[in-house]
Length: 128
Image (cartoon, rainbow, N blue to C red):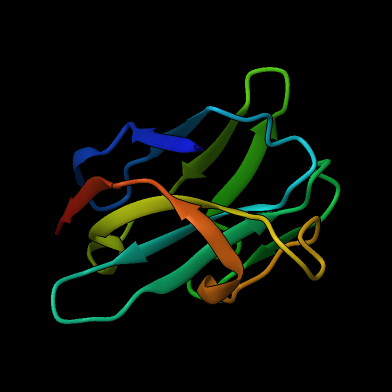
């Protein structure tokens, strides 16, 4: 059983930076793509960023492109999200997820349905 635990959320002001971490346990995830998604009140789950199994390929939502950076450390079984120039509209609960199963599980994906395990999330609040 895979467990994903996010950390690093908090309350910041617009323009500030935050670094989120997602620590995995129960299984080595170095062969699988991972992603970050977010959900704010009244909205559905939104793709944020995804990274391939070896970190060589990444994908970002247009809304965060150029401001957020996803990375991973396979030795630590962890994935990270560096968030710069935060905006009030970035306020949400951020969750990490890992792809398993069939298909191109080693490649990034913006489709949340292609992820099998999810963390409970960490809350990010950006004040204006």
